[in-house]
Length: 130
Image (tube, rainbow, N blue to C red; front, side, top):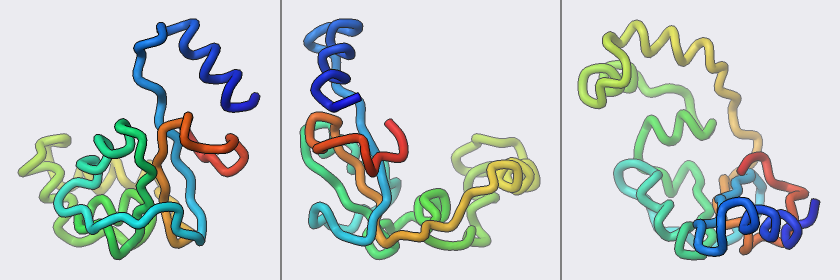
């Protein structure tokens, strides 16, 4: 399906004022110059929702968990404790380790992870998810 058909179907289903979905994909070329994101990488999603493409890499993601979950690095030692004791997503660090083992997060084989609103991409050809 092409982008324009998808957007038309999406707006018919959810209305003309519904925020468009965000697509993501990996590549070895930078799509957009992006400043380092301090803290959680989801901070940059407002820029994406506003129509800007964001290209993240090992150098632009400051959060160790973000680097790990995007596949750019191995899991830092502090992540299980941080996720359980600070963020409280799981009760114990051991539960975090077990959960992460089940996820089987693959290592990124490309340099950049891009996010863009679907009306800002030419096609779904390289897109890994929406």
